[in-house]
Length: 300
Image 1 (cartoon, helix red, strand yellow):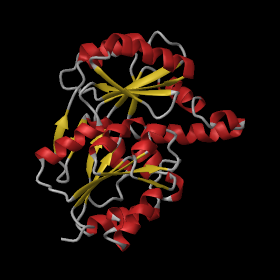
Image 2 (tube, helix red, strand yellow):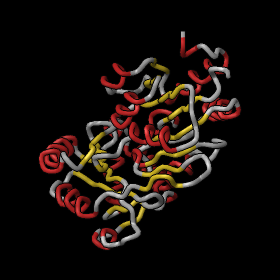
Image 3 (tube, helix red, strand yellow):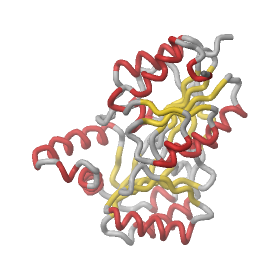
């Protein structure tokens, strides 16, 4: 069997496969679909929920989806093989801590819903907390606000003043919390969460202005292990692409890892076997094209 067949390729979305406008480029799409055509397995591995991930990768011909950092996994046949809900009492404790900080807005997700206290308030914080917002003109902020609003509106983000109603639903799975806000408040909230709930939580981030909060046993790395142990695929090699904190454990577990040039996480650069161009320069496609052209590329 050729070395460029029967690989399991795990690809992060934001900052990796998608560009800064959350778009899948034509070049990345062609390269990923070519790898599928050659007999490889693609697994999207993202912090986004399942509905978002599925929508954003609709042009990829066949993929498993590891969403909410591994809380939810759908296999190549479209079957849900993991649906790991956070303990509702733990979720209440997280909200109690996050509510202490006026400079933070947050949401929690299920496979197909995003729940926040006030949609407009969250979107405002999301826009103003971005690293590029300080350099934006007023009209650029308005333009970005419209784009972000349209995106979140299509992803079923709902306002709920009473979170308790969701916590009391037996059939509602809480997969992840995402918090964004002032850097100093995020740092304080992270410390408080760690001091009080560290034995129950896995906390990662893609920058100093946000937190991704999962149950302790949840990670992309553990999702990779689960897939290898509980599905019929038997890849010759596992290859991971990523750019942020929720990719660290995935890099530890994969046979070969590729960090994006745009990643600002030193630890990820140190763990990676290879660095590729940024997400805005088709960094994923550049590596996959080299594998397609030379089956020994990863083994040289």
